[in-house]
Length: 367
Ligand SMILES: [Zn+2]
Image (cartoon, rainbow, N blue to C red; front, side, top):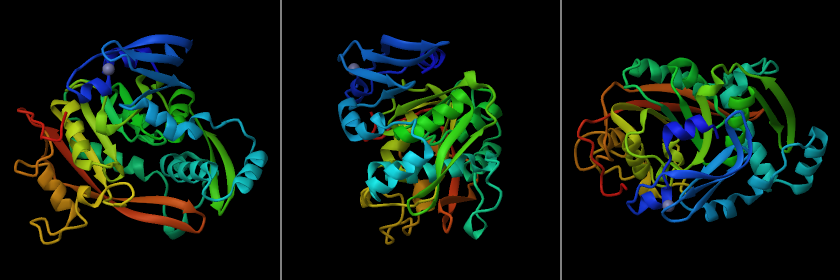
């Protein structure tokens, strides 16, 4: 956690914010620090007394820290120094569905999507002519749509995954960029890319067979980038902190997409923009059906279409989700998620830009 980002963004206690009290966090303990980058320490709230750990340079600023640590203990404690042969044996022995298996599959797909185009060993397209780094293409397309039309200030990259969009945003906007993600394994990849400028991951070949890939990436302006673990449903920031918020393929990964839109609208400055990409790939175990944006209730005015309902949520009217208002034409961008050498998912992700309206208002699900 870079002190420069902490001082610029002045994070607030997400637990106190939920009960309507805005309390800035303090750095209570620093155990390891290198060049203004806190590697291990504790942030604290003077109002409620809650503590938020900084683990391997990643501050964990979520409303229920205890629950997060209980749910993610395996990922927090997982070793990152395993050699390829030993990791392979541990993978086989722990078997499909194990914690190690879930980390490797998840990281394999996302790192390929974020950084595959910079991997010198990635010489051929994936199955179905799929090409890596769709996230970078979606971001480039979105930034073209908004054409630098946002006020001065920092940029929030929500669900930054393996970090490609953080690096692209730093290079393309010249702003201070904060990437946030709720996944500890992905945030670790992201931080390594941003801080060390390299990627090291197990790329799935088939089944439980993975090939280790390690390569340097093009990541200039590292001092402008940082990665934190935060929950988009309880963003630890005061209203109007960011000039631009980007959320690529994240809305359909939330338990409450409406609350997510509301939170994004809260932290964007008046006149600032939000850039969202949504493949509308809903899963009931992630988002309860009633929270899906489209994909149900086809008798309604939106005909069950996600695009139409998202448009209503970003427009004045009874379905408005907070302060963001769509103002540009939308676009569709191809996005590929590689599962293994014989399988790749092909998506079309829906890109929409929305602006925080002057008279910002939050709906009744907001905080
Ligand atoms: Zn607090």
